[in-house]
Amino acid sequence: MKHFINLKDISATDLRKIILNAKKRKQKRKNLNVLDADKDSPLKGKLLIQMFEKSSLRTRLSFYLAIKQLGGGALTLRPDELHLAKGGESLADTAKVLSTYGNGFMLRTDNDEKLEEFKKYINIPVINGLSPSSHPTQVLSDIFTVEEIKRKPISKLNISWIGDCNNVLNSLIAASVKFSFNLTVGCPKKYKPKKFVLDWVKKNKKKIYIFNDARKAVKNADVIFADKVVSLNDKVNKTKKIKDFKNFKINSKLMSFAKKDVIFLHCLPRGSEVTDEVFLGKQSKVWQQALNRIYVQKSILLYCFGKLR
Ligand code: CP
Ligand code: NVA
Image (cartoon, rainbow, N blue to C red; front, side, top):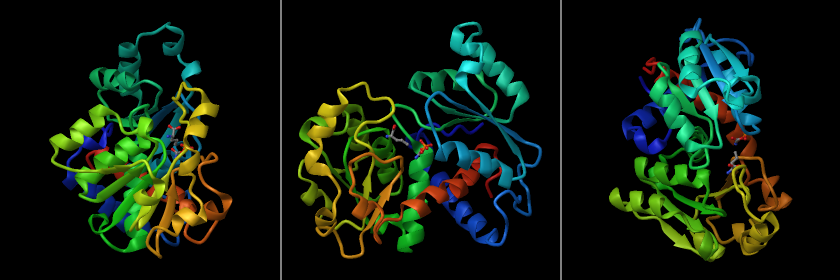
């Protein structure tokens, strides 16, 4: 059974297959309505159960549409509707029941261990729809978007990340190893990537470049990524953290230090880390990026359901 919990645990070959499949499927359904199923309906009759312990707009909708377009259906649960949240039922029993009712389980959680626990007891694929340590479905979709726009393999591009070293960056770092691309990070010194992430990079004989000067970090960039300074799972003094990042705001001046045809990407939702001028400007591809989540989720589901061809 194939879970989709962390990019680092999935082979580069499979990740590449997912991207290729997404590209083919996106091209094939150009004239279809959003709820029309792909002609082959490969997941006909299958049910994806999804549960969100944290807010979500894109992940929720894109998985719903992804399984629909593959011919199946989705059921979205709120944790407060289950006995599990109130301690009335164990995770192990919940997992067993999910396995008998559904064919896949997507979880957005505030606890990485919960994903591992579900994996232990469940008999259907588990997908990580964002956890404190990673956001793998987002980043795989972002690789797809970068290659779609730049019409080149990402291994030939310079990618810069400006901002907090959070779950999305952790997955981007894992992707930089799997897809062999050049990754530069710009963040204040005390917010650099966690040691366990850097150790993993080292173990995989990869190097990422970290600067505490945003201008240096975007030099020669083909793509600039950003994300909120304060994430869903952050238990910090928000005002202080935002202040700490004041020199890492993405504005037109900063964009001018990158390549001329640089694009701006942001997983959304946004905070004050980027100006409207950049976010709503020509170089920004954030809406295309958000929409592509559907196409990549579909191929992630096919991978998990053993139907990726
Ligand atoms: N980017 C992303 O995961 O968005 P949501 O939190 O709205 O799902
Ligand atoms: N880093 C952000 C991503 C939101 C999609 C968060 O975890 O809140």
